[in-house]
Structure formats: structure tokens, C-alpha cells
Image (tube, rainbow, N blue to C red):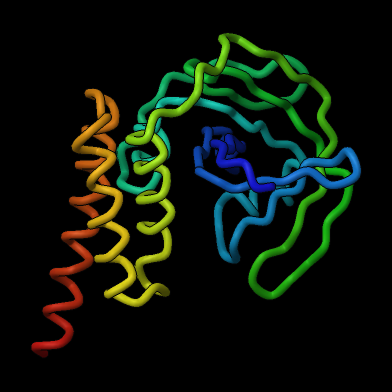
Length: 191
């Protein structure tokens, strides 16, 4: 099972890098497999630590993909790093082992500190739609355009029926990114 979370890592200049990521658990380890190249990958290799943040604020997922990255942070407890202030829970991790791969290396991490800050009350359909659209946006260059358009059409139903303010903001950011991509594709075809 893949869990959609927000990863925070430390950049070389000690600033915080925030990225959406899918993680899974294997044999008591949390496994993260960022694509090459990525800041998350380089930061984990260099620092050997990271924090996973569980949040129901889908603006953060959308914001990471659309350059809306000014989220309140707090220092972590047991590792050098940061967590999202709005995290419902967070887990501080240390790298245990690493499997290299040409596309997606796998980091096996051991939890060293975990805390729940607020209860998770569940996602509504609009929040789930935003997460799915965020995943589509992260794959615009590799998915067929027809598939993207079909998914948007379907996901829009949930936004129209169940979205609150945060979900509408996140949806707008992602749709603006998709529109820029559409314009780029159109320009490339006419050139």
C-alpha cells in the first residue's frame, strides 16, 4: 500500500525542501523511492535523515507542484530537520540502507520519533480528487494527453460536489499548471 505524504528534507544550505511523495512500509522500514534527479534524493543521500508529514491540507501537495511553497515549519525533535506545522502527524527517520536504481533508488528508513498532533478525520472526495490531480500534474510529460483530459473531467465532478475553500485553491493551482502545459504543447505543435 502506498501512502501519499509530504517529505521534508534539509538542503545543502540548511533550508527545508518540501515534496509530495508516495511511501510504503516493508519489514518495519519506511521505503521512499524518489525519482532521479531530485532534491529529495540528494538531500537524503547527504544527510541520511528525512521527515514524513501526514496532512489533510491538500494545498500543500498542490503547492509543491506549483511553486506555492511557503508553509509554516517547526524544528524536528530527534533529527536535524523540519516538519510542517500543519502536519496531523510526523515521523522522523534515519536512513538504514539504500538500493540504487537508474530511475528510482529506494531508501529504507528507520523511524526514530513519531507523534500525532491532531486526529485525521478522513478525506472528502474533493481532497482525494486534488491528490489524484497532483499526481497527474507530476506526470504530465509521460502520460498521454487524452488520459489527462479524461481524468480531469472525472475528477472535476468531486470538486464541484464536495470542495471547500482549500480544495478549490489547490485545484486552481494545479489547473493553472496544466493550462501552461497545454499552451506549451500547442506552441510546440505549431512551431
